[in-house]
Length: 303
Image 1 (cartoon, rainbow, N blue to C red):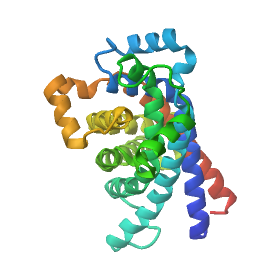
Image 2: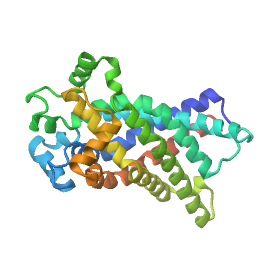
Image 3: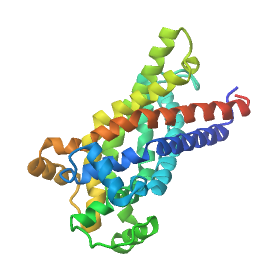
Image 4: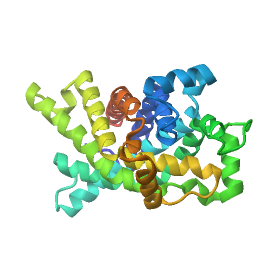
């Protein structure tokens, strides 16, 4: 028997939060390298150079810079995402004139995931802005875009945003986030469900019975598909959120055209290596934590 809709919403929200926590803890150093290389592509020769340089200049804590807002961002994003994902599946059933609780196709689940990303973007954008600024603060100072010696903590970044731009300043890069999330999560959930379906078909079992390793591979494969599709958009979003620290930054289209004109198309893929290295363990951990915590709570609720 399906649990009460409120109980179901709480379960989806909590499982999403568990998944977001697992994702950050398993992949933060790679995310830091990604943001640094996106915003300052000429400063590093590659992923290994960025990783070693950061460690030599700032120490291990430099690779975990922005972990607090990253945790808040991922917990908020994934909690809202998976809560909305459940509700958007019901919306897809309604629009498709299907019975409540009927199984959706992989394509329909991908559409529900894309729709759910609209709501998660609103939760993600403010915390991701703080995270990106903290991660790239050393490079902003080294390039002379901001004064050296500034204290770099979550609270100082929050105060600076409020002082210079007000509460709406936290939504710099929101358009880029929407443009990234809508196609990105269509690919993310579509690839995840397709991969699980493929494993289930070959193993002669249900999606829920494929086991830990196929489940984690499906999550990693989904993350890889997402980033290959949306990486250039994410690069522009990172630049808008980081460079706006030094003053008013152009919007998505002007920033995009400026990068193409001055740095070339390849600059939009700077930092892709650490992203792809990170995506398998991070997204594998995300879905493992989500699926198992959700199953645990559903069993406890008697569903």
